[in-house]
Length: 500
Image (cartoon, helix red, strand yellow):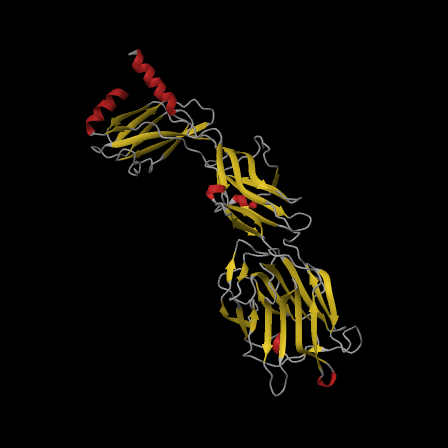
């Protein structure tokens, strides 16, 4: 008998243990992925070669305005020209993601590959006399730097109104050579050829930024390597700065293609032509303003759960930085109305951070040169779910005439405010609705006895009890052991006798 009593006590003790461990971990990122990320700005998820992913700043994108004549970003396998001025008619280059200067990809060219574009409307190469300036810029990653490799070329056959024209950029002597044949026109229709060679040798398998810009006010044609002047010439009769300036002059040629990567071996990225002289050339990879992301509201399970700390798995190259914030609420609707609270990683927040729904915000900033981004591979949220109260250890059901008297033991937990009574017609399925007290479950307050009336005689009813706490939205604990009773008219006199 003593052994049975001990076993019963042990079973009741185990039933009263919390349903969850004291500390729980919620993972964002890592093997779980970043599916909990809600809104963001200038931040992207980058896949890692070894598997998994990380959050980084998004590369700055080339802005498109009225002066943008041609723009190929190579960010998508379905290569499209972004301004709508050109149509990609043939493309044998490949868009790759692993090696790029900016954005999500770059164009991989081989000696036999190229991109062929045709104008859909008036473009820089078919606009007549251009009295304004122009700028051509792109990133280049040459593989071999072989003599004569072509970066781009535009060849217009001669016509009754105009001579043969050519604009090209090729590799020669490990530098870029820019050539303009019959492209610049002066007074009385006189044309000149202009050629410009870079002075700094290029290095294979290294990204460099190249800019060629023409200033119509002076006739200056300037070549910049990584934003620094490398060579200069003037579209003037003398080839030096003077008052007589030659201007670009073309005619409408809808059937003349622009060829990119004509015999080139390597990568090209962010190829752009502008119909204006660009004063500044920004080579920054990331915006100094950085970016941010917010998670969706994370459900910690129960009201007043405690948010303990945030443990980010991150890398901060250079002097890049990440700042974290959080907000908590017991209601999913109310969380959006809460203020963001600064959060120091790995710091225990004590007991003040409580709620059911947690939302995180992170602000990412690049290093001082705007060339390196912070990297976040995982966020670990440590929290303590509020433990629901244990169920009553003892429950008794006494049948009566159209009623059942329920009695249960009091739960010795200071957070308990009352009890729910569940009833139904199948074990574990408490969907009863025929009691005069109302449908299951019945909220009965802080009492340990209830007469469930209005039941059907002869029908077998199943009952279970749970305790609930004093939360604004009461947190109900686990159900007690199930008991059953069948009300009947035979108990009518029995109940009357007991009352007498």
